[in-house]
Amino acid sequence: MEETKVYKKPTLAYSVFVLLCLACSTFVGMKVFGASLNVIMFLNWLLMTALAVPLGFSYQDLEKKAAQNISGIMTTLFIIYAIGALAGTWMSSGTVPAIIYYGMDIMSAKFFLPAALILCSIVSIATGTSWGTLGTMGVALLGIGSGLGIPAGMTAGAAICGSWFGDKTSPLSDTTNFTSSLVGVNLFRHIRHTMYTNAPAYVITLIAFTFLGLHISESTVLDKTLIEATQTGISNYFHLGFPVAIPALVVLILLLMRKNATMSLLCGALAGIIVAIVYQGQDPSAAFNSLYNGFKGTFDDPFLTTLLNRGGITSMLGTSMTMIFCVGIGGMMKEMGVIHVVVGKLSQLIRSTFSLIFISEIIAYVAQMLSGSHYFSDVMLQSTMLEVYKKKGLRPENLSRVMEDCNTIGGTLIPWSSTGLYITATLGIAFTDYVPFAFLCFLTPIMEIFCAVTGWGITKYKEGENVEV
Image (tube, rainbow, N blue to C red):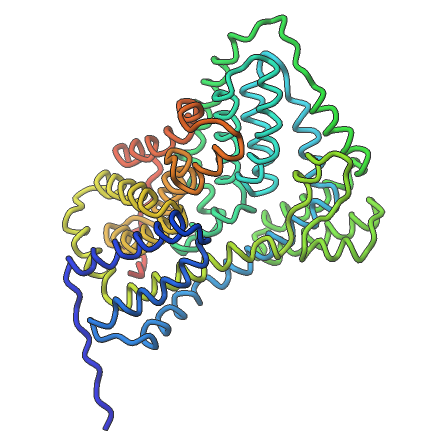
């Protein structure tokens, strides 16, 4: 007769110890040994197995729960790959290059800073990447701003705010899809919900950069050399007529018709391939392969090569692995009972919506300070707070918005985080130079608190609505 396994319930002290071990392992692996987040997170499965032994769990017990947790994000993984496919084919079709081309027309000398903010927002929304936008448009704008005599920190602040706003707003963003999938909320519902904090913060940021730009002399002439060179390179390589808008219109129409997101994105990718072959005159093999490997154009300008050669399903493999390994760890912690213990304690401490949001923000920043990774911080928030939100009657999009406001852009305010290190290395400026002008990054978490205090933008379950905890 097979013996029934007996599992021990972890104490609060042991549960906190498990979370700290996980955070320390991630921090040491990434910052001391320079390993990638995916490598560390997969190796952390060994750590979780070791920590589960005193409670009577085996790896098989943990793996089963991890697989169950991962199965819940399969739909999001399909969307992630479809986004990669879309990005590659839209580059090939000229859709994204056209957006960048016409976006550059808004540049002017006196309003350089707000124009930089808006341009980076447009490019980031179109490409779905804040890092990619900052590494291309941000670097270019820094050079233009220097020629105008604008402090590098101001230009960097505008580029950072625009890039991260676009990233949080874009349905093509990996972080936007990641956070919405973690809490189990529809992608577009999540994006709409973030507007309660994003939109006011963005407007204030736009006003602030407009005010800062007023000190620029009327006689200052914008050096459009780089802008014109970029536009010329795009127009020489791509035809920019109406057909390049067709792939975007296909996706927009299908989504407005409430069609499946993955199918809508794939239809947009297919439309991009057709436009690339028929209108751009590209080789059919290259057009189709851009769906998987991304766009591979040949440009004389290295800036254009960096800016446009991107996308493809392969560009999303790293993100998908991060999601799988992190979500798997979340499942393991649930199986061990660690999350249940922590959630129970947090539920006792939380008396109001304000305390719930405030504690969520503290967890978000502390987790990212310890690990340096916003993905890790997302998993910690989802694991410890999602059940609390549901018990308090708040819908999960409230938590996914906190993840975006404090994790996705939170790294810009932490100099040793992966995001902070990327910014300083890419732009070649000090953290103290740009952080005073990262207005959006400060304002969105403040707007979260405003929403918590006033109840504005806080969605709750309706009476009688089934709440899965």
